Length: 193
Image 1 (tube, one colour):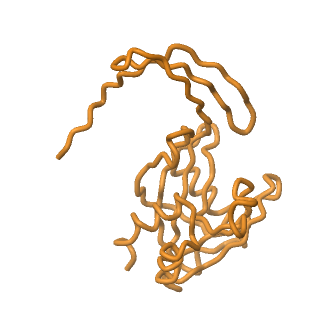
Image 2 (spheres, helix red, strand yellow):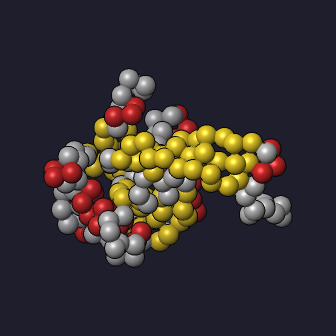
């Protein structure tokens, strides 16, 4: 097995906050030891998040949400995309508590013991967001509300169930383009019974 060095030849020289809002943007000045030079990088800072792939055993389907994503507006045919339910960790929450709460808010499914799949950094070239991926099996009786997100958070979500085989075909065809969703589908493939 190849070992990757954990020693960073890069050191923080200075950091300046350029924007603070829903996200933060920092400018870093870094010293690179082995190059004996300084570099400048920008970092978009986001809170940690959790997401979950729900497998409905009764219907042999996955539960997705369809929602508008402003960064895709004008870049893709539609800015409405299919995703797994997700949300940021609230103060004092751990990743599992977050996904149990978000799952109920967004899909209407009540879950209790999601399985951790992995943790990813979806775009580490610019973004420090860390996302915890989970998987859970549900049945039709686990659906206790209609879901659809919280109006107070301006979430207007459509809950969609897509047959398992069709979901994987949608990844292959480019219809499912969300990275965390594709990662969940990859890691969950051998868990479907």
